Structures are given as C-alpha cells and as structure tokens.
Length: 64
View 1 (spheres, rainbow, N blue to C red):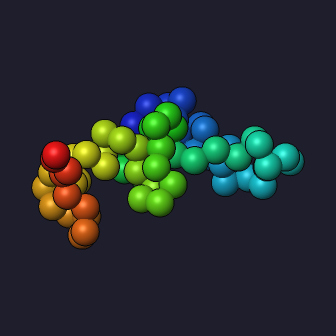
View 2: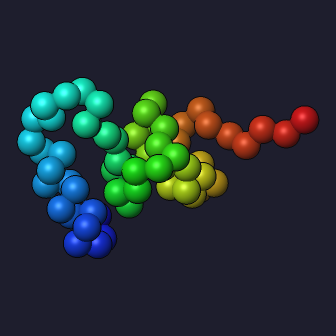
C-alpha cells in the first residue's frame, strides 16, 4: 500500500464488515482494488508483470 488513502482502507478491511458486500479485495502487491483476480489475489497489472517474469507457474501468454 502506498498512499495514505490506501492505508486507511487497509485498516478498515481488518475490521469485520457488517454486511458481506462491504468487504472488498485488494491486490497483495500494490493495493489496487479494481481489476482484481481472486484466484491469484493480484490486480491485472501485477499479474501481467509477474507472468512476463515467469514468477507464476503454469501461466503463459497465449497466441493463436
């Protein structure tokens, strides 16, 4: 988490949400909340960066 707003939201996430819809996921690397992949727990940008480096086993760029 880099900005103060993201840190405040992270502190808020640690509390138990009153309703299930209030809980939202964030990328484990950068803290981004949009375009989040639940399976990898990463946003699309971090997922792409790690896939290009080869850090995610079994994931490769497709072409057809």
